[in-house]
Image 1: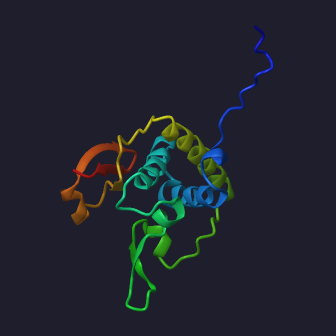
Image 2 (image 1 turned 90 degrees about the vertical axis):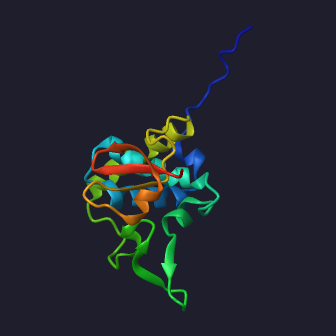
Image 3 (image 1 turned 120 degrees about the vertical axis):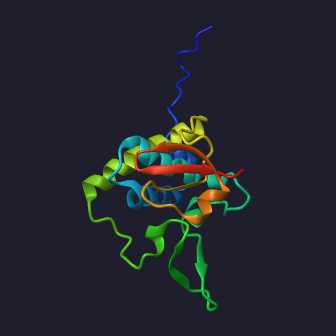
Length: 155
């Protein structure tokens, strides 16, 4: 039997996420780790995606990234977000287009790896820079360190 007519197209990142969610994921990677090596950027991507599988977090990428504390009027409180860049009061428009394109490529490859069950963070839902010690880190299990980040998951 001849199966030469069956052509499998490789899966693309855009097959897995809506355009808006993919853009949010790339922006998050850019602002959280653009100065890091490829593996560290992938770690940030995978933490964000791991939160999608956890009922404690919103169920789409943009909402996971934009999760924040608000005041009594519903306004975001500066520097009280899950991902610090989102509510630091600065512009969210990337200024370094070369770094952005690099991060976009790495983010898309990380999404494909994560989708293939190749999570280099071992299910981590949290991370922080290795030069800080946030209070929340003591209540979670450290799973790995990648680049300048330490990764954790729930007990």
